[in-house]
Image (cartoon, rainbow, N blue to C red):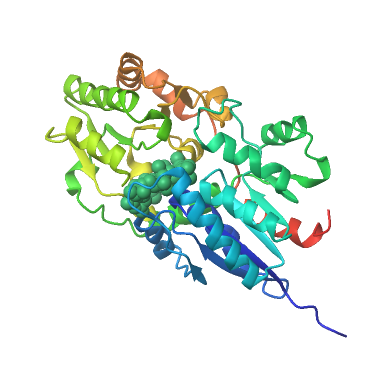
Length: 379
Ligand code: UD1
Ligand code: UDP
């Protein structure tokens, strides 16, 4: 009997969230070595934030394009990436390319594959706000990938409906759950057994019963909206003497510099370097609630029973808002402060949000994706 060669699957990723959400898919492909050979291609749209994730999941890119520049523009990074990924796919000739999410790496990765006539699988397809300004430019990126994809791996039934409404053929859409829950459950298990240190944070802060975990980085919030969010955080710390705010700052200078100007110096606001995924998951488990604009955290927090104040005007992950776990506050200072105060003071309201349930997956999304690649290669 002749043995078939494994299919060579290139996984293209560049930023922190893509790597976290691709790690379970890479693992699942490696577990099926008779059928698949993963090829890891990093654009390194992020350098340090990406390397932190690669370390945690013990991943080494087969090809590292090392494209990040300080304070890069969207056009600048896109042009470097299309050239480098085009050359890379032309010489590597994988059987398929997988991209994840809505970043410039994901969009340009899909486009480069399309130019090489290589089939594309889109992990986390179909999320929509239907507002091209928010999240910007991600809503456009994610939307443009869909028609290029042979396989649209929709995390939720709502994403499937969005794709159908855009005339993506039903046969190409597969509801899988979100791979971030796979990554979270694996990591939370390790953290439970061996709680990691949090670099830059004294242990007594971790015992704080009212710890608020904060992240923020969205481009559409740069300037006044982001300043308002930071002012709200300061007001929360000043008006609640029992609160500690932990904020690992994103490395984007448009975020880091503003946050430091407004928030540094307060004894109960702890500005940290970006954390590796293990320590970050420990904070996620230990905090009372989150204030964030992160896409991934809107999915992870409900899985650990943590309420979220989403500092965005709109979300492509409506399930957590509908379930009652998350509230959209935008960058409205008063609204952020009043919602946070309620979560700090009103135990019934807090419990209602904390127990709203976890809609985004069961930890088996990556296995489903690999099964679909195996069974539905020619859809
Ligand atoms: C990108 C994605 C966004 C995603 C976010 C995750 C796009 C358009 N945006 O946004 O969808 O939610 O990543 O965090 O794809 N920097 C470093 N080191 C790093 C990472 C970033 O110094 O490890 C700094 C650099 O100055 C870099 C800047 O941050 O130029 C911006 O990085 P970039 O990837 O262009 O955009 P993000 O705002 O991080
Ligand atoms: N995260 C992390 N360390 C941090 C902050 C966030 O590991 O200091 C994780 C977080 O748990 C989530 C992901 O990074 O899985 C979110 O990344 P980011 O906010 O950069 O991007 P987004 O989710 O908004 O696309």
